[in-house]
Length: 463
Image (cartoon, rainbow, N blue to C red):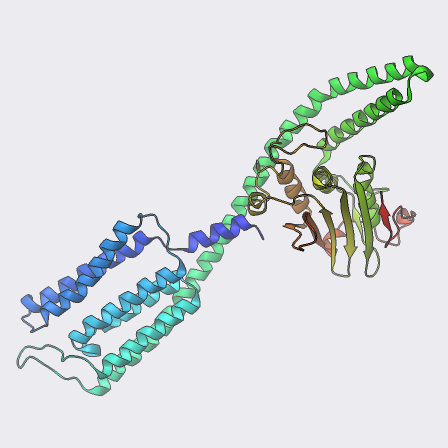
């Protein structure tokens, strides 16, 4: 689901909290301190006690500085997390240098930062940390202080044993890194799928709630619209030929708009488009669909450039009231915001079908582009007059409903702004895979499709 919201959600969830790093480092500090104190005073081994605690103190100071500077809920970027893990590797290497290098059995703790990185960071940063750990292990195999011991204060293990420890660190880093990354990646994919499912269910829940509101609105508005229609017809009948041309034109326009309102209310009861069968006029060619979309806008005064062309046979689709309602809503917005012209371009290839709606208005705001598809995010500004000439802001449901209805059909909806310096305006592109667009349509050879195209492919109609 190519939503910006989903991508942001997954990205934020992947970042580790600073509190997690701080707690793990306090645990490491406690373990290191206990090991140094136990070896020095419990076993009587001659350690460089002061230097060891100075190295441990650097981790404590870093932890305190992070606690003071950032809140516990702060999430680290990948680079910051990698730097903190690199510090842990270097700090461990410094302790091992003072206590025998790879002869110290605690040298296997080099695996811990790499393991944490594999579960939370991208593979390239885990690889860099693994190379750092192996590089420092190689250096410690060659250069280190003697391993403290009981009798004469030092012991030297055979180099073959040290080589075996180095090999174990190398293989352990590689194996645990890859294994942990694979397990964590499967978990992340499952979390992404769950997040995508939750977003879809939330949008469907909002739309289901709106279904009830739409039915109630259609019921309540039916009576006043019927009254307006009756009064309009009565006025036309009473005035008859005595009415001035301006009054007659206004009354005819009023009757047409009432008819349009009643038609829109009728569509609200059939937005799912799940009617049975694709009979006569249930299957339309792509050119018919484009023409049906733009026809209601031709009398509103905005110039429309309509293009319908493609490569290969023209596709046909099953009539879907939900898709038509969503596309009409987008076109209504384009007409409302256009300064002079709106372009509707329909194209198809052997693989894809798409409709692109462009206007020469101010374009989408950054908030709409970032949160496209969320309910209650309005595309209208508070101070911009709408098509009726009045100032006001909508509920922010039009784009949400349009996006949900269109994506139910298997389409992808992309919102952008024109990037050319000479042009400006919004661009909405709705595209389908061709086999999805034609799903459920009557085959092309059916006589039901032998209807002359109202908009021949390639025609450009300026209105």
